[in-house]
Image 1 (tube, rainbow, N blue to C red):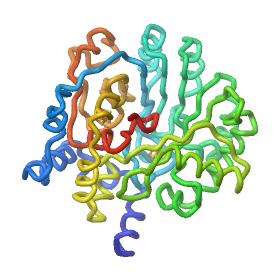
Image 2: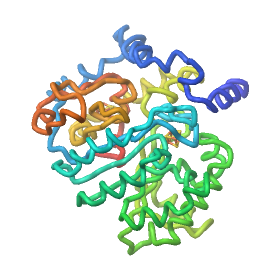
Image 3: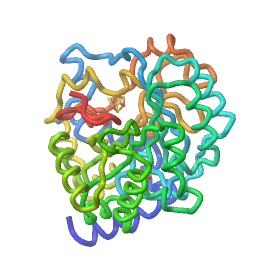
Length: 362
Ligand code: SF4
Ligand code: SF4
């Protein structure tokens, strides 16, 4: 890739696709791309045909285990590969009224994991109230996905490590690499140094220490148009490097494949990597991963209360194929009877060892 393209991508990425009026801010445009080209020409099989070969179409949910709630698309960062198209310019934020509806569901769900995500979920003005209320529901694993730099972004966030500890929150944080160059390339200048400081602060209150119940996991996603390598080997490398260089401890590393949507799709097209990447995903297709893709045990709720099979479908505005489509009508039995909405982006979840918000699946 030429230096000028790199520079263009970097400059463009300082705003969301939506703020730039980029055509990919239109989810229908993304769907047209995912359904057209290589797939419409018959060069590559549609995802539904691929999973039908092993009798896995239609894809059905199993037992609901994870309720994932996106409390807003606002973020202090504008990462190059963000599948949410998040950034400081995004104003979509969950209101307290919608949070109340979510709390009602959290108190009655059969799911054992509550997973709060964004954007930077901490930027929602009602975030702390929501965490306090949700933590009373006795959910076994309460995850907050934190981008780390938010902890240092403003004085009002400096005490987040103590706040997380007080509510026994499981912190899951993006950390694309243990080197400054690769991290800053993907997430922005200065992100690595701030992430390191934030991890040290989390360690100081007990997060991530070997025998601590305060869980701190990191998320790795590739910095370019390639698939992640072996999760356990990467975890060993991250642990060794972060400990040696900065004294940092954490529990697990989740390796996540970049799905070809939103800003990563924009990156693939701008860098002329889209077709090669789709070939790579399809070639690495693993039917064993289909069994365990996260939509089979997750419901995703958007900032305005709509229900989706996963956070990726949320960003493509592919609502659940069920009579129940909104949190105000939530009914787990009815939802569990749905067919999962799939398209070619799903190849990102079934390549190699598979990919989910909890890392590899197969
Ligand atoms: S920190 Fe996360 S939500 Fe924010 S822009 Fe980066 S990838 Fe997107
Ligand atoms: S993108 Fe969503 S719907 Fe598709 S396989 Fe992955 S988790 Fe399931």
